[in-house]
Image (cartoon, rainbow, N blue to C red; front, side):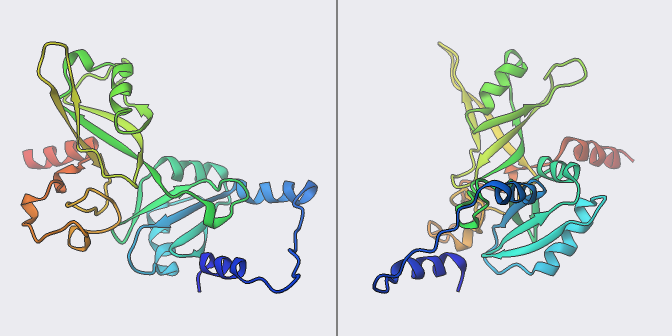
Length: 256
C-alpha cells in the first residue's frame, strides 16, 4: 500500500473518541529539519513501470559525475529523495536538467514546506527551447523573453559575447508545465501583416505522446489515439531539438 492510500484509510476510520496525536514542530526541531532539506532534491520519474532504485543510482552517477556521492532513496510511487553532500553539486544538477532515466523524464524540485512527499508538485521542469524563423526585429533579449513567456516562465535568454541574440536559432530556458500539451508553435502578429509562425523544439526532450503532446506516455498508450499512422499525428520527433554544440559537431563530421 502506498503512502497516499494509507493516509486516506487512516483519515476515513474514526474509532469512538480517538484523539488526534499532534506534535508541535518548533524551535530546535524546525532548525534541524531545515538543515536536512537544504541538501536535498526530490524527483519523480514519469515512468509507467516501477523504477529500480539501484539502476537509477548507477545511471545517474555516470551522468551527474558529482565530486561526492549522492544518496538516493525511494519515497514510493517513483518518487526519490536525492541528498547531496555539497550544495554546489545540488545547484549544478538542478540547473543542468532536464534529466532522463530509461527514456523517461525526471522532474526535480527543491522540497517545499515541510517536505511532505504527497504535497510536492511535480508539474514543471526546465528545458532549453529553440525558436526558429525569428524575424530580425525580434532578435533581441527582451523581445525573446516575451516570446518565450507564451510557453511559460522564462528563466534565461541565451546571448552571444556581444549580448546579442542574432542567429538562425534563438535559445530560451523555460520552466515548462508538463501537465499541459507541449507548445509546438508561437505566432507573431504584426498589424496589417500575416501571422509569422515560429516553430518550437526542445533540447533533451524525452519520449512523449505524438498524439496529445503530453510527456509521460507514448502515443500508442494515449486515450486519444485512434490508430492513425505515426506520420499523421499532430506531434512528432521533429520537436526534439539537437543542442547547437552537438549540431556543430555533427556538421564537422559530415565535412570530414
